[in-house]
Image 1 (tube, rainbow, N blue to C red):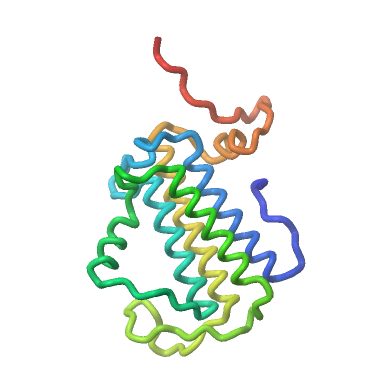
Image 2: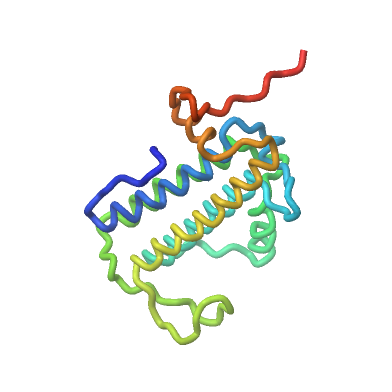
Length: 197
């Protein structure tokens, strides 16, 4: 996908296109990384590219479930806590390709779940959650999709910073490489550093 969402006129399609654009930002930040590099936490915090992708995929799924009021089988509290903490890192038994494939599945699920849904459909605000407003009873599906865009964009920015700390690669050269753009005088697609001989 190019650096901009397409100029669609259908509101739902446009919101989904913006989510897809931000997903591409995360995918581009991971472009060309090994599993070991995707596990690195090179900044002052504990964020890794692989962990960010896992977290954003889980976050998107949770918000879309809330928007369409889909219930998944409850997990034991201990499993929920473990999954929360594991959701921020790429474990040794996981691969970058695996988390990207899972993220692709979340994207397909989002698009099929939201297709045809009224953007004004009310979405009940969960009660007793400290980061949700106590004085708001419902959001709209539109609000949820905008929130997913905001969450994904925030973490795509984190991924850009983490990636630059790993190997100096930045967004436009990575996007150019991922999308196969030709080199120009002012933009060279990223390529892996040549191995020392």
